[in-house]
Image 1: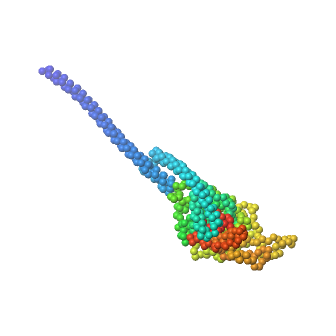
Image 2: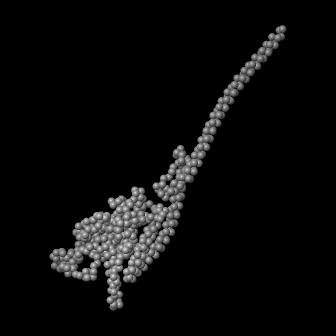
Length: 532
């Protein structure tokens, strides 16, 4: 009986030990389970973070791909268009979140490299095109000048009025083609192609307007005080500049509206002001014209349109090369006012009117034509009153022209109405008498030209009476008749016969007569040759 409790005691001891061991194992297992759960939660958190980062990277990659596609499909085409047309905007980033990042800097670098490459290629292609055009236009220009000389020779050779009319029309068309070829050559870097002698500014204006179709609409007012001329090297460039600006004024105004041209003399040079009552220009067009006429930016042929409009580009090229200044602004008549300023130093000079008189087709200065009837103003329905005659100065103020000090004009010449006592020297001997310069009077009939002036001293013929200003057509007919009479007289002197002088031809119905641009420095060349 005593052995049973011992066994129970042993069993209970063993059970207790086993229970303790199990408890320890259970507690350890619980700790391991808790630790595993914590590790599992951390792993799940890391996994979620990794998934989020993967999604962000995938979105970033897609956004970067979209920016690259936007660069190739939109921004680069915008850039190429903006290089040709500055007003075209270039789009920015598709996703603003890339602004300031490495992606933004990389894409900007790509745009800069593309811009440099396109600009260099455009300059290379345009340079090649200008070289080809320059060579072609120079050859064509030389041929047109030869054709012009041949036409002039034929005009002097044939007296048939119908042949003369056809030759004038052919010469007129040739001059229009020559003007366009000349402007294209100048834009491409060629020189104007002609070298002339010192010429009166009024003659240059008339020569410029005679090159244009519709020149009869141009009304010129000469307000020069002195016989202002342009030096030889700048005569043809000045004529080309005025021709292009007059062409714009005539083209963009109604065919029945006049174009007013005013020649003014300032303290530091002379200016030619061209006013039209045409359609005008927008602010952007005015700014672009100002930039082109300043000649500061290089001009590409591709920027001049299709077909190229070379007018303002030609003016800018010549202004940059020869020192003119040209500008445009709104005209008080509603159109555009173009102003060409020719600086006195070193482009202007004073000419001797006896050695080199102005062309009879040139406008008479207001000071010399003050006694004539009022002339029509620039707009229909208005008249401009002539200014009173100014006394002739003893010496011309050349500093006002900016020509330079030390040059003086011819002193005042005594006229027939002067006091005879003033015409005697200190020794009592008569002084040499010279006539006052008189404005040009159109040639009349031979009887009128040969009739002596009534009154006055025989040593100094009286000043001829003022005659109404003849129209360009009438002056051209008279000069043509004078030339035919001269040629007929020479033939009669050679052959000993009395030739019959043909009647003066009637002017062409579509275009009148104007002085030839190659001869506007010589009044003997004004023979009714219409030019563009």
